[in-house]
Structures are given as C-alpha cells and as structure tokens.
Amino acid sequence: MSDHKTMKEMQEEVDQYISQFKEGYFSPLAMLARLTEELGELAREVNHYYGEKPKKSTEKERTIEEELGDVQFVVMCLANSLHIDLEEAHNHVMHKFNTRDRDRWTRK
Image 1 (cartoon, one colour):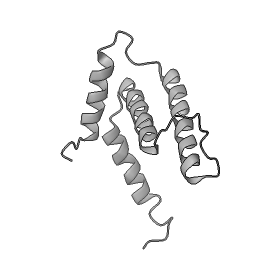
Image 2 (cartoon, rainbow, N blue to C red; image 1 turned 45 degrees about the vertical axis):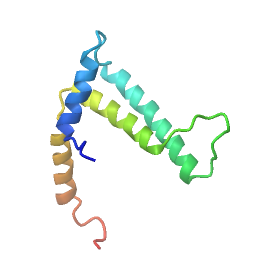
Image 3 (tube, rainbow, N blue to C red; image 1 turned 180 degrees about the vertical axis):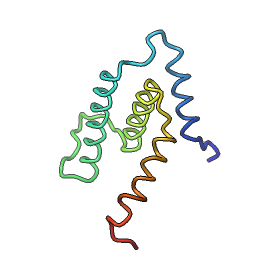
Image 4 (cartoon, one colour; image 1 turned 120 degrees about the horizontal axis):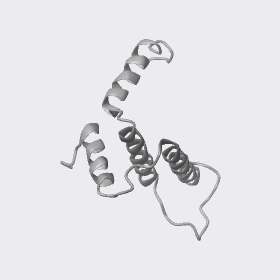
C-alpha cells in the first residue's frame, strides 16, 4: 500500500478536514471527553475479542482497528488545537523510554 503518511501529514489532513467547518475544533475539555468516550468504545471491542464479554446480537459490528482510528483522530484533533507536533511528542517520549526506562524491562 503506497498510502504511507508521516504523522505531520496526518495531522495536516485532520486540520484540513476540521478547517472546512465553522465550528472548528472542540474545546480541549470537550475533546478530552470525546477521547474518553472513544477509549471506552475501544475497550468494549477489545473485551469482545479477547475478554469474557461476548457481543450482543443487537450490537453493531465494529473492529479494534476502527476504534483505534477513532482514538487516533481525536488525539490528532486535540494536538492540533493545542499546536502540538505529535512527531516531536513521539520523539520526546521515545527519548524518555530509551534513557530513564532503558533498564526497566528484560531485553531479548
């Protein structure tokens, strides 16, 4: 699949999508509530596939991939609205894991 995008390109794509609407981005608190909602939906799907809670026959068929995509979209909206570059945020967290937490786990 040749549809590889950088995080920056994905953030720009989300921004272009949101920018076409007068309402723009929701407030950070509203987006946090939305993120919490999406995480709940992801948790529900993971529980259906890997947990002890089978889907009800009336429940819509969703996938973990779909729910992760929803979470990612809301995270990008929140980051964009706060002018946070997620590539930079990723680099910071990986540096932290590779320094502070480097001896925390058993290496293969």
